[in-house]
Length: 100
Image (cartoon, rainbow, N blue to C red; front, side, top):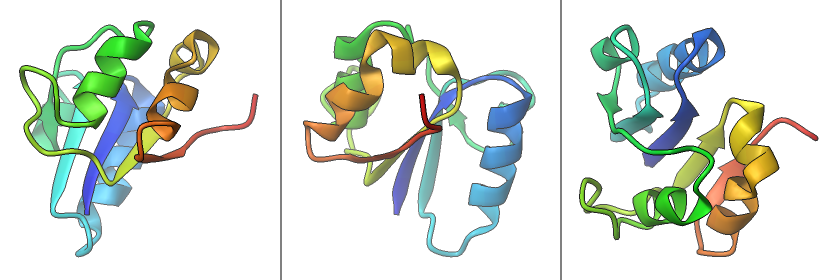
């Protein structure tokens, strides 16, 4: 399973650590990530408050990502408020997010 995790803080580090341990995860990408997350996953720069950029990354149409994500996990609240979670859900990627 190809997973895109949105965020770059402590919450996302804990999520990435757990996801990276799963044998079902074939590729873990974190956007934007940080130095600590780079040890667990591929970090990709993206503006989390730009739904179009997040959708391009999730669907594999961005300059960096060539493979679409099977699952998008949204950690921070900012992308939720910007509508990124709703946008990825309408482009055939499943998303997991905290409730608003």
